[in-house]
Image (cartoon, helix red, strand yellow):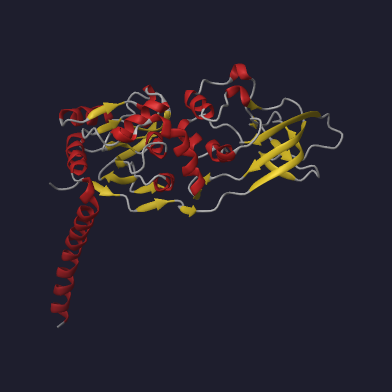
Amino acid sequence: MKPILQRCRVVWGETDRIATLPPLHRVVDAHYQPPTSDGAWALCGADGAVLEAGGTPMAPPDAAPVVADAERHLFIGPLVTHYGHFLVGTLARLWPLLTWDGPKPRLLCPGLGPAASRPPLPFLDVILGHFGLSMDDLVDPEHPTRIADLILPGPSLKEQAFAHAVHGDLARAIGQPFWETDEVDTVTRPVYLSKSRLKAGISRMRNEDALCDALARRGVDIAFPEALSLPDLVRLMSVRRIVLGTTGSAFHTAVFAAPGRRIVGLNWAPHLNANFPLLDDLNGTRARYYHPAGSESGPEAGFHFGWSVPDPEAVAAELVWRAERFDDLDAIDAAQEAEHRSAARTPLVARLGRWLSRRS
């Protein structure tokens, strides 16, 4: 079988791992300036120094009307409502909840808007519920507000940059209630996480339906992550020995699942977004990512871009073949890459030999 799938060896971004905790500050008499009409907001210390900000805000003037709030607040930054981006964004400020002591905090979330206009976020309900919190604990004061006691954490993960070990601790604490140790890896039949029913998002494989049909004929179950709750998706990824799919938010769920997940992913480009290895490393996920040679990408309505694989039948066959040999993939890929390099050198060596013959 001539391989179509090429192992992604280049990472786009940084993947720094940090064992220590992120910085954590307690701010007394913080001053919060809610978003202006252009979306700019600011969180300042008692001395007026800007601690966090969005847009290009100015520090609130001393004469600004101020509402006092004596409750303890935890700053979590703007709420990212996209599931995958939430996991590499807003979630990174929740790590102090792991050791929170005392009354539950209010969660300061700039730009949140009124409760009536917030979209339903079932995954956030589940995550906050683990800590005895709910969406009602998210706050974004409408007026400039003096917050008497505010906890300001540094992020435990920054997209395409770094991840602190505590980010993995946080995700495992949230996800552990959703899987049982004696069920891990008990289902050997692979499952493919399909995005074919999504109406909008970051990326879409245009011919994914054909790929899913070919996979199903080869004994692979097809699942649709957007139709599953967070607990159900975490359990699915925990009980399956092999998970297939295209790179996307669903793969980030492995950080909540049982450690050591095995993933074979299709990536639209030869380079891989650093967020995947960052999150994979936090929970020991054994992921192998591949780019189908000959794939094409371009604009796609409702998505940032669309892409297609050149031969869904052949890609499906190779995905299943690699899933069956998962534990040997590092050696298989290294051998195939060495063979490809050797084949590429042969014409060059022949041309060099002819040139030397003519020179002599």
